[in-house]
Amino acid sequence: MAWFKKTRKPIKATTKESRVPEGLWVKCPSCGRAIYNKDLVESVKVCEKCGHHFRMTAAERLQLLFDGGTWSEHDAGLKSTDPLKFTDTKPYRSRLENTIKATGRNDAVVIGTGTLDGIPTVIASMEYSFIGGSMGVVVGEKITRAAEQALAMRAPFIIVSCSGGARMMEGALSLMQMAKISAALGRLDRAGLPFLSILTDPTTGGVTASFAMLGDLNIAEPKALIGFAGPRVIEQTIRQKLPEGFQRAEFLIEKGFLDLVVDRREMKATIARSLRVMMGLPPAPAEPAAPPAAAEPATVAES
Ligand SMILES: [Zn+2]
Image (cartoon, rainbow, N blue to C red; front, side):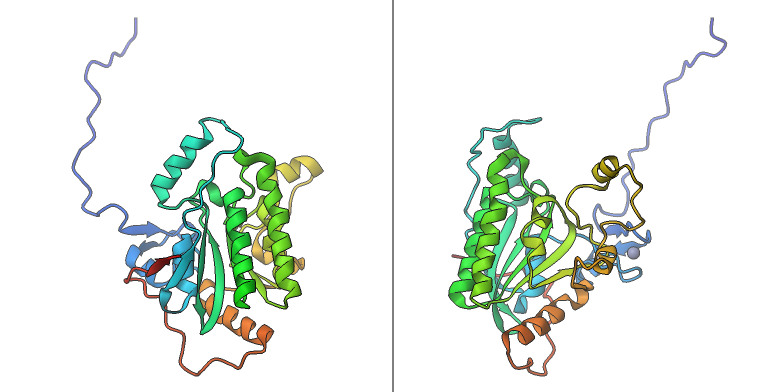
């Protein structure tokens, strides 16, 4: 017989609601500071205390880079057809449908044309919330078309990467996108048009192994995770402990993998300056670039 017996029911949790509405404050994962959501949007999602860069959506990224936060979107309707009829923990087709519903995007990249500091530019921005920003046939096709559009416009091309790599649910077809995009970038190169690769946290796998490392300038955001295989896989393969900060932007620039590590708040100005130098354009007029209009919704025109 037991000495003690629990006869009373456990104490119920209070159902009194918190007076702070959900999602009004965000905790900085780096310094622990609570940041008011509105302030975070105003500081382009960078912690003002420690400089931690929060992840941005594809649209926020385009809003930050394009003048006035406006651009025209291209090929928004392209969707994957599940060519391999793939199933892992659930069928790829239903995973796609759910993600499309949740994100309001048809795949993991948004293509926009507009002006950046007055320079007509094509930008491809990857959406991490769409199956980890993975590159399947749609991402490959859209980025290739975007490069061709830049070629037709004689405009510079920028890809903002934020991706876990190739989309395994599309198997070898997703790997073929690496070659396809690289070939399109080769055509841009022969035409003498600049291609800038912006690497944000995270940029890994087949994306790093192809276009993300092919920029005339490879520019990363601070502390971004950039690599091919994950650190655990590498440690198991080489049977050695990896150094501190391995695969982070600051480590990679020291080893010559990157050209620049740029704070997001300086990103647009840095890109504009680089493009002007590379394209032999005169310096921008004296007026400062307008900050991103956070409160106004971006005007997106379908083409
Ligand atoms: Zn912080």
